[in-house]
Image (cartoon, rainbow, N blue to C red; front, side):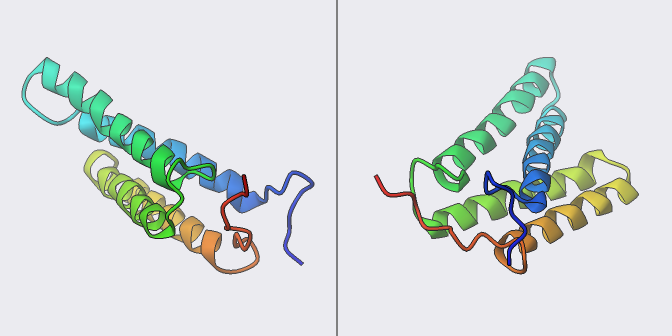
Length: 125
């Protein structure tokens, strides 16, 4: 029996949402370190997370516009992997390691184990 609430949300889903929000924040902070001018910092801090959010909405979100599983997985690898790498660039090493481990474990638990999303088929129209 899979641990699910009435709404179909489990504990790993809540952690996954937190990981996704943290990914956007880390990408924004890292993007803000790019370039040498204030304008470059602002553009990087806005455009990098905006690109991640747009990609996520198009390919990786539960109600993604484009329902192609390979693109969803690729988007998750790029965005979450990029956020983990950004953590190593902007956080102290122990915190960056914690972020990377939480991202990896949460992602694995999304696909395997008692919290896996076995109902990953796209919703019917």
